[in-house]
Length: 190
Image 1: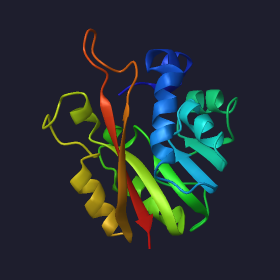
Image 2 (image 1 turned 120 degrees about the vertical axis):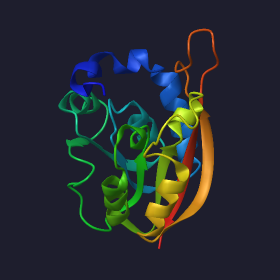
Image 3 (image 1 turned 90 degrees about the vertical axis):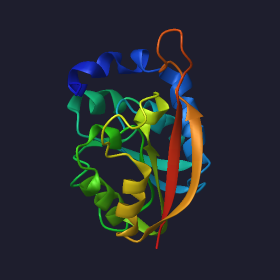
Image 4 (image 1 turned 45 degrees about the vertical axis):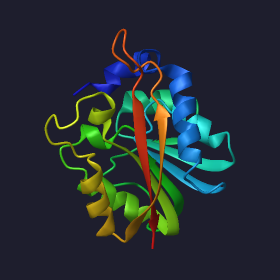
């Protein structure tokens, strides 16, 4: 796994920058409420988070990497925090997003439980799933972002599937190949 503190300074330039962030934000905005509070969990450099904030949402980024959070702080309100123990009150936000997080985890269950815990009733959780498949590695080992695992775990926390969207991961394709298309799933809290 990358050292995100070291990677923070060049992350945007090597990961599609603003075009990728704008594409991700547009897809998320299709799935979340038009107003309210949104918690962007594992916000990284805050580039996607900033794009979400530009559309009427009050956003807060959370990231476990001090290097990423430092860069994000120049773009959005951000706190340093662990997605398995969020520094957020129960049932206090209207939407939670995790973009490009779950595939990094050995076990996504604690993060999914925390997302469910902080959502208000009727709130929306949006996450990327199947990142390996987007890069053409379907079936290449177990991944914590497999849709069936995410759906089953969230069902146990009272969240039901509510929608889906996709976006192009500009700048993320293999040299000479197409950019991947990432899949987002949304869930509604009961």
